[in-house]
Amino acid sequence: QLARDALAAGVVHPALLTLRAQDLQAQGRFADALADLRRAVAMAPKDIVALNGMGLCLQAMDKFAEARQAFDAALAIRADFPPALFNRGHTSELMGDLDAARGDYEAALALDPNFPEPAARLASLAARRRDWGVVRTRAAQALAIDADQSPALLALATADMEEGDLAGAKQ
Image 1 (spheres, helix red, strand yellow):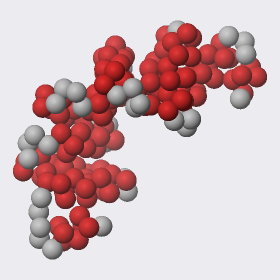
Image 2 (cartoon, one colour; image 1 turned 120 degrees about the vertical axis):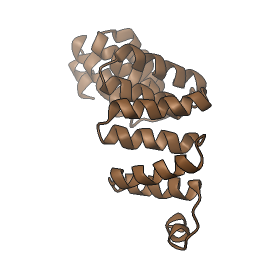
Image 3 (spheres, one colour; image 1 turned 90 degrees about the vertical axis):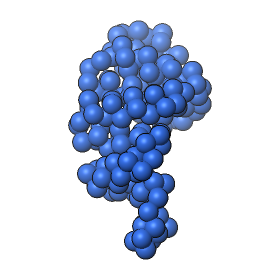
Image 4 (tube, one colour; image 1 turned 180 degrees about the horizontal axis):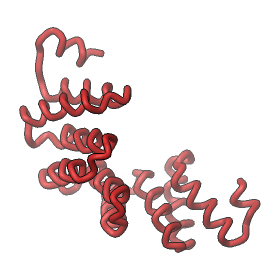
């Protein structure tokens, strides 16, 4: 609200635009959010948070190639930014580039072992490969951090079903 008020009063700053964009994204107003983020990046081309936000908007709009470019731009500025690595990985996964996705998820997790989403997505990718040992390891890692990681839970249930543990899958 403070960012919206300041912008309405004529105070324009990349951080304010990025904050308003985050609120617009939460409302599902991705085109409006993207406009704010493009403006923020025009004012501050090395703002990795704005670039990452741009990528998320573009991803939500199914503009995957452009989203990956935004994440690449953020990572060109700071290669050790786990959110952009994870988000680029997720975009790659949505595009069907599973090897690139796995590499980015592993890199994000190596930089921040307490980031549950990469571990959960790695469990999900392992389930697609039918690598049940990796599913269990990565799902356990994700769920130890955040018990509500649905990709990890689904991957674990899949592993249980494939290994004949229907009671475990149901749980």
